[in-house]
Image (cartoon, rainbow, N blue to C red):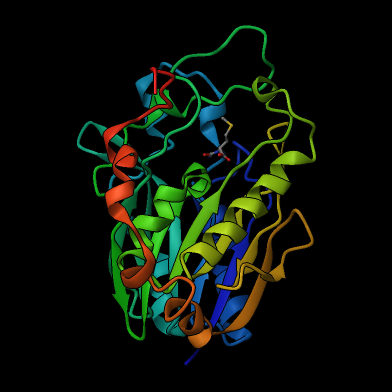
Length: 306
Ligand code: CDT
């Protein structure tokens, strides 16, 4: 079975950009992907606004302006209507306000414009307050609570689709939980800065770690991964691009070259996973969960006596 998949990378969204302007960009990208024949499109994390967790804000009204209280809402409805017209499904990341609870969320919308899945980011990186001496802050812990929906996988016609969000893509557990539900395609959006001083790493490494995580995870869990960056210089901070579609072989099938709005697409052979699933990664035959207890019993590494 072949499935035509696209990734819609976005260039920066500045703070002054309105929702209407941003949704118009998303619609253009969806049209571009549909024109190439794609049936599913991945958009980035927090795709409706600038990456606001870089700022420490305390005014509730100001913070609220970055969140969606309904989906679709008045401003996002054109994207849903367009998906229905084009018959193309999509993943969209956004900041969700649910009562007084704030989540970093993604939804899966099918080609009828209906929401068929929701995920709330589980691995929330960064800090809850600004750290002295660092030019780039990452304050997701201030704005988002840990997601409460687990890592579900959704039936999407001929495929099982799972979702994760940005930092989740670095954690093997993210994919394994979905791999154990026989996921075919994982969609992930990200906002990853370079020059985040607290890691003390050279500027080329975030891009390397992005692909390293995606490629290893696709291979080890025999799934496709469609990963969409928000890239370029946003409010003075550079974020990596490198959006890509990764095959179950661990190879990058196609990759964005710009740091701007850019669609990449690939006709994915969904049977490519079969050889691995029935042999080297035949989970039922080869996994040894009785030896994996530490994974669920311990949170951190232990230096207690062996
Ligand atoms: N958005 C997001 O999760 N970004 C993180 C940056 C980590 S630096 C604290 C990422 O893992 O790419």
